[in-house]
Length: 347
Image 1: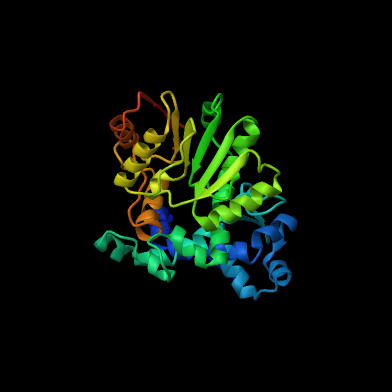
Image 2: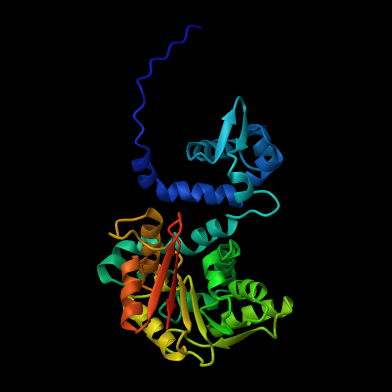
């Protein structure tokens, strides 16, 4: 049979389609992870659609649809009849220590459905998406304590971010410090890292009661009870304990409003001795003119619609104003190529 195809040069508006199809494309990648597609291709490089369908116990039609989507999104690639993961996916979603699975699970289970309330959140200027998780408390951090599986997902996500390590400039800034308050310290990942980096440093985690219980159990399992303690509290309003010569906020400031962040800085100044340090790792900062980057824009939508209804990713100029007005003698800011920032203020 004679077969002729005339095809005009394609006009594929990739960026526009990624926006229009964003929800569906994200769910496709989340589904590929949940259905173990990436793990299967890690173990069976070059498998055909038929082999994948049999190996994952899925209909062939479903596998063909999922493979087209994952290939279009450049998560997998095709060579002849077989498929394989794109190189970076091995290690991110598959292999002995995948690095991205907790992130995709956190976005999937916590973020995406609440974000359907974004328009109303913008109208009202508050986190309407929180209504997706009924309960008490005005933030997702309070609400998820009533959802143990979601709380575990959230802290696995945060622990994964923390396990990437703290910036060396932050760790080195605590050299010579005697005691540090780890405000909003979560499950203890950062405290454990700092305790091991500085064996003489005493670390006190301040966080909600349910979080402190999780952190205490982990610290005990690591044998660091003598060096790390936990203090249940509401970091937004409770006074900080005295006696520390350093205060650390890791991945906290973007969550809250400018007024709340000013309070954090002021209460830190009040509990620190002269020469004490306030270290803030947001981790991300916005561009100086607040026109990006994309990751800062997305996180700002999350803080508005779900997390607290008040936070966003701030520019370095905001931090300079908060530290200056609280009476700090100096402030240094270090921003890396991923727009992660560390602020070190000297009292």
